[in-house]
Every structure is written in C-alpha cells, then in structure tokens.
Length: 329
Image (cartoon, rainbow, N blue to C red; front, side, top):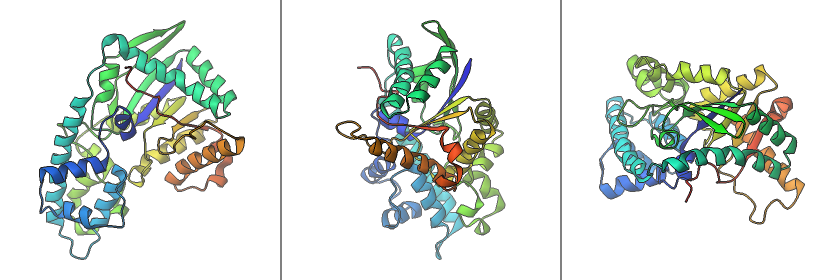
C-alpha cells in the first residue's frame, strides 16, 4: 500500500469558492469597523512595502512591526489577541458558506481529485511520472491529510475514517491533522523562529504564543509530532494550495529533508498561483519554463538554489489547474 499525504493550505478553501484571502478578511474588518484604533490594523493599513497577498505576508508583516522604533510590546500582544479573535469570527462565517456535500458526492470529490493528478502530469509531458503515480494508486492508498487551515472544510468531504473501494484498489481515508489549530480553539498565527521578530523586546514567555512550533509545544499538542511521523512514513506528498511562505520554513525544510532520504519519494507540487495557458500548452519550451519556475519556488522556500540539487528536482512534480477538490455541481 502506498502512503499518500495531502498537505493543504488556504488555496483549498479558495478553490471551494470561499473568500478566505487576507484581503477579504481585511475588507470585512473595515466594513465592520473592528478595532479601528488597533495598532496592528493601523500598521497594516499604512504599510506600503508589504503586499499582503497571502496569510504568510501578514505574518511577515507582524514580525516587521516589532522592529519599529515606536514599538510597544504590551500593545502588540493585545493587538495580536484582537487579530485572532476577529479572524476566528470571520472564518467561521466563511466556513458556514461551504455546505456539506451530499453523501453520494463526497467520495466522488476525492476520487476525481486523485484521477486528475496523473492526467495533469501527462498534460505537461510528465508521462512516465503519471504512470508511476497510477501504479501507486493500484497498490492501494493510505491517505493522510495535514491542514494549515483553521477551517474544517476538508472534514465535510472526508466526514469519517474509512476504507474506500475504487475498483480493485482499497483506499484508507484518515481524518485531517490541523497543524495550526482550528476555529474556536487555540490557533497559531506568527513567525517561523525568533529571527523573524524582535524577540529581545519580549518576555521569554511570548515566544510560545508567536513562534509556531513553540505554541504547539506549549499547549501539549501532539499535532507537530503526528504530522512529522506521517511525513516521514509517506511515499508521496501532495502540496496543495500552499504559498510556501517564509514563516512556515520549518515545514518546507522537513519536506526537503524527507525527499533527500529516499530518491523514490515524490513531491506533487500544486502551483495554484501560476495560471494555465489559455489555449493549452503550445510548446515544450513553455512547459519546461512552467515546471522550472514551480520547482524553483519550492527550492527558494528552503533557501537553496535550484541548480544546486538537480537530482532532488527530479522528485518534484508540478501540477496546475483548479479541478482539484472542487464540489460536484
């Protein structure tokens, strides 16, 4: 049986049609007049050097905010609490918009996604790799999910641990692990490590609320250990809807290490930020350009030059398109 791990981020919720981008959240804050005098919100509104396209941009922005000359640690901690409270409220509203699919459709959403993977690989001249993925399916799958989202929309599709029969193959379906927490509970919103904020200005205890892995350890969470165990036992990993931001660098480094330990391991890298050509793939040069840029995006996330590890790049298979995990109409 092949161990397939699906690691997904905000691109998953966006693909469901939900308004879960940071810009959507911030517009809601303004319309609701939430904490108009809040220091963090004022900084975000006035800071022009950060685009805030992804949630990781917000986390980088929070770290940068602590480097300001007029920075006040106590005000920052209060603002950080406000941010988590407002984010929880907004995402609950968005989560409710995605209705649980009818039971007869749920399995179809997952199976269609799995079928799309070798099809998309073949469409980008990764035909041998597509055959390898299909062979892995035929051996049966043990499917795990690691979520970077607070929302629990994947659970509406998966709904329970079970064995799913797909022709002669059996797929073991497991429930998602939420590495950053879930709505209505403790959530992780912060930086990767102490180099990404002015840690010398804070009481040592603040690290466990702002540095991601420290928070997971402080709340006696097994999510980090569980996710690393699943990763280390995976044969194939699908990264779906992830911006590969610097504030989660720890995880990209772990995936890079995982690839290095076994040259048979495969990373399926869904690049949701790169649009498909309107009229399909017109040339092999265009395909190669897309593949190289997507692979380089992952290498950049771990701080390594693409050219320095060509062998590892062969284990990274980019995917494109929006047909994954979409509700059946």
